Image (cartoon, rainbow, N blue to C red; front, side):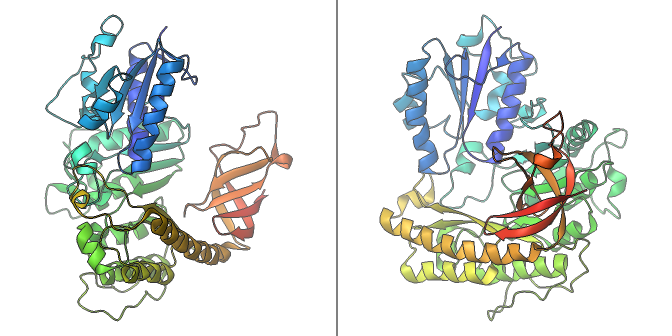
Length: 479
């Protein structure tokens, strides 16, 4: 039996794509191996969003080929169509696979062993999402609801690598989630480049996976993301429901209200700001201003927490703060973000505005990246006028602020009993898991070990929080 090994670099969408690649390979008789130096087939699922992610493959792939000369190497993901990447790795990569072509996986290296064309349809880029994936986890699953992006942020390569937005039919999504819930999955994560841009036709009433009745008073034949969230929430079972990533310009009142109404939806919102200065945001083509973003965060907190919203002196924001509603959950909503430092046009004064935003919003977590130019993007034509040293300095400034605000937020959990999804056990004999607000939690495992050392993995438990750190919590298991 032939063996395969998949190396995934990048975002949650890449991880989900790799699960479908694995499913496709196993449908055709391949068996997974964890040893990339002994596998017959190696698939490298690449990311082109940052230069650092791209640089990884230039050392990784030649090294694998040198150590495992018999292996056939397939490169897929965001870099699969880049001619400069092909030129650089032409002596090491056997086949180049655009992610939308998984159904048409018919290359010369496979013709003796595989028949991949049993359901090929090159006209629809989302056909590959119909593949039954081989999920990495037995209790938490990414469920892609679409692919591609229409926003064309000036720094981002995704619209060029993945194309325009194409979304899955709602009945396909519901069918995948129902199957996962039947298998006792405890966490469903709906993903897309922009989940809150989702649109789909109402499914056929004769389709048994149709949950149209859950959409009350629908006046048209289009389901948006809020409707989809309600439909997934309505599936019977004990599971958490998350989603990512949301574009601030598309975070609607309806969606925020839906988060209140749906008891399974986790009160965590990942809302990339990218910068804290209006001029930088305009250069990034982000389509909102800082006043918009600040009031939106205030609105989310007001509705989900019943707290006083963040105020801002600027007026004419397109986001208006409605009357708050009592939150269904006691724990405060977690706000996380993405930020880029050193973007072209980011002066010291403009960077100071980003630092100001960090202090004002008090994020629970921020993923901070140093800007690197990406081929084909509009920003690649701008002068990259911030030095590497200065980018690093700015990153460190934001990290210092983040550690302070994250710790401040985490202290609110002290003494509280939280529902935690257990994910694994560390070498230091601690269970590790997460709250619904995506806070990392550790608690001693020695007194709770049985003959089956994995007896808590994938289960919900109650943990009393006794210690708060900047990026995590510690507690004790409550019987």
